[in-house]
Length: 181
Image 1 (cartoon, rainbow, N blue to C red):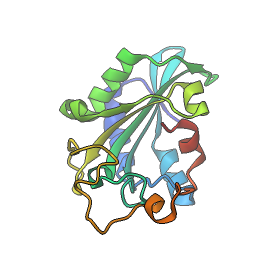
Image 2: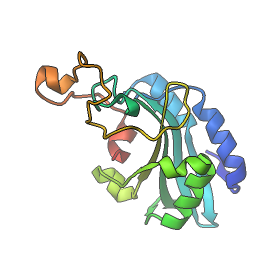
Image 3: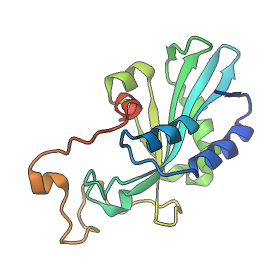
């Protein structure tokens, strides 16, 4: 993996990589190849880097995870920090992460949904997730309502949990389980 020294060079490169596919969160060969393309390192100092994953995610509503269709797709930037070359985790650097998020999302940063670490591995690596939700044409939006709000959901639509009474056991990518929030 290349370590970028210049955020201005990394952002267009990462965006081109993300254009190669849509990430669905499922553990399959296509998603794993896409994920490998969408991981990047950005030098922060000579001995530390920001680990970045930038993808276009789809399927949040369609899979039944969230009820509100405004949350179906997003631009997803995961940020954590590590020591070079050991990859040992470092604490989250909020001000540097803000600089990175602004470089990726520009003025749409104000629409970002920021999630702290959730899983044990995500907490160990202090991974934070920046999501900017988009319309079907991939233009950033500020979703109407909350993820479980059915106001904008067709009346006939049912989630997995409504039909089966429990949460779906989605077979998700190991990195997503480790770093998801």
